[in-house]
Image 1: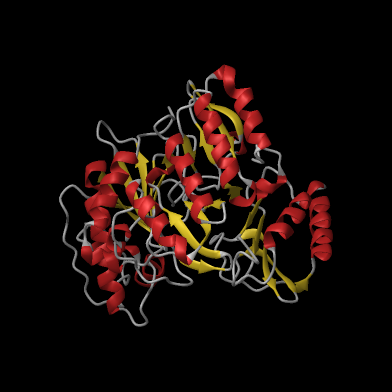
Image 2: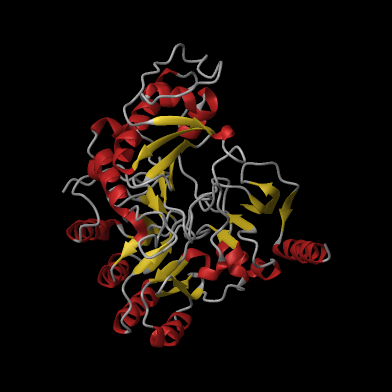
Amino acid sequence: MTIAPLRKGWCPSVLRPMRTGDGLLVRLPHLGGRLSFERAGAIADLSQRFGNGALEISSRGNLQLRGVGDLTLGPLQQALVQMGLREGDAAGESFGNIMINPAADLDPNALCDPAPIASALQARLAGDTALQALPAKFSVVIDASGAMPLGEVDADLRFVAIADGPTQRFLVTLSGDERVSASCAGAELPELAAAVSRAFLKLTARCEPAQRRLRALATYVGAAAIFAEAGISCAMESGVDRRLGDAQNTPSAGLDVARNRDRPGGRMPCAATLPQAYIGAFSLGAVQCVGAAPPLGRMSADNIGKSVRAAQQLGARDVRLTPWRSLIVTAVPPDRLSALIGVLDGCGFILEAADPRLAVVACAGAPACAHAARDVQADASALARGLIVGRGVQLHVSGCEKGCARAAPAPLTLVARDDGYDLILNGGVRDTPIRRGLDIAALATFLTQRQSAESRQ
């Protein structure tokens, strides 16, 4: 098996890991986040054998193995390929950023099970050599709505299921310009995604300066121009394509476009942060589940191994990874819920919706990350006590200005520097701070005062 060169500072995978402060980071894109207990346990064992035993759930619901050594990387890659988690070469894993609702197949309110469509999409994109030029972070969301919608999960290309007669249809929007949306049937989705992807590569090559992400291109030229280049019928607004010249506007059979501004509210529906009702025991229709969150998305191989073995012994079905850095154990026998919750609690998972750590997002920080200026994991845990619970993510703590843990703005964002933290309100890591060089004591005081002021409102 050919091993691709190691790269630093990019989107890691199995055959192209990323070097960090604690060794190599190997990410396992797993379509749909659905894992059998056998496979989850095997991954935990591999993490202990070939890494440092630390695992993370990423913001896209993927597992990351930390601390893999240069000498243990090859055996780990071979074991993962044998398990069917990756293809045998780097080209085969060129596209893995497809996200679906983690439990749509169990959710009576979901409009469909997007897993088969996602599998067809992955095969279509991975089999097109021209699309290997897509950015490593190019991502697609297929949202079946229901109890766990994906409206706040960042994606370049978004498909949202809509109830539309006997044939399941999807609205399609491009990040960066949601004023125009395409519509397609589920069977047409893979080809439409491939067409939009090819259009992105063609149009960005003609732009000056080049637009490196689809959202940047859509902001620059408008979604209508991209749909038109893809051969998808579109009612184009005046002047949208002026920087590209005359775009082709060839209708595509079975595909149509509607203006989002003509829909109620003028935009696609946007879901709130995952309801905290899905932490601890909950039901999806007649199915009993348990949601558990590793603190700040990190867990040990020993604890995840114990948890999945116990869940299997107690008669549960499988485990789902979510883009909210949590996991869901599905189909737990009702009389075994308490026993499973006891095991998960003993393994350090968050099982209470009122836990303030659920309001925090933080990267690995120092020393695990070579770019991080501080131990943000410890600092984030300490600061969590000053947060108001029940309002989604309130605090993003980043070890540097890359902001790997969260791309979206947050009410409070901290960026670690050598002399303390920069504090940003209602923004992201690259926005202008209101204060610089703050230590943990000053930040804790600020959070306490902020919480007190908000509680009086």
